[in-house]
Length: 242
Image (cartoon, rainbow, N blue to C red; front, side, top):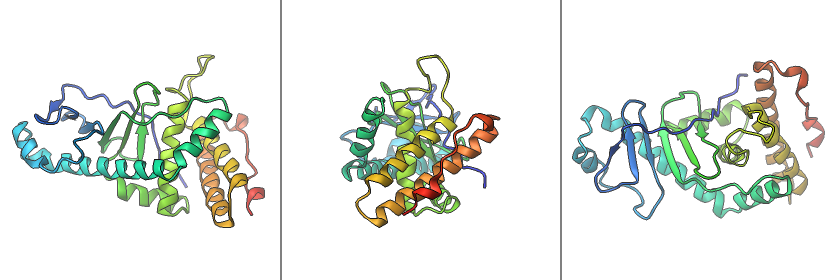
């Protein structure tokens, strides 16, 4: 089963339209990217008026609204991730394993490109951008179905994946070698395997076993596609199942 890419992309908003009353919101008509900060303005309840005021043509407004809805949806999912303690749990693991603490996004974006991606990040811990697919909810359902996960498990895996990119700091190691998606999935598998050992009940162990299995599958797929199968490390996940 081919992996759904969680490709890393930098949200480059070139020559953006600025919505007049919300300087935090930018729209790049060439690339179809909507980007905005999370701040006190909250949701843009009068988006239609703002789009008209900014001179955005009617033909583009549906796409912008869809992007905006997906950003707001992801912001809520991310807020739930933080309030549930999962962000601190992952942060503690990162510190114990030589990584920096993952930073919260400073900018959120949405786009249909890359069309196969559920989410993406620039991975730079000093200027974190997390982007999501324009059709985020359906992409999450597809991701969950492909890897045998519940929707909640898929959400946790996607967010943790993007935070893993963040702590890997823009794909660059000290020796100059660039990280790949396979590297991210390998570390994600390690994290979920460690969480199995810390699980408080059988249901939680089962959840993290499924997520570790999915990360390992994605790691294997990417290792083969990158022609590094001979060097990849195999994880005996089946022995971890409780």
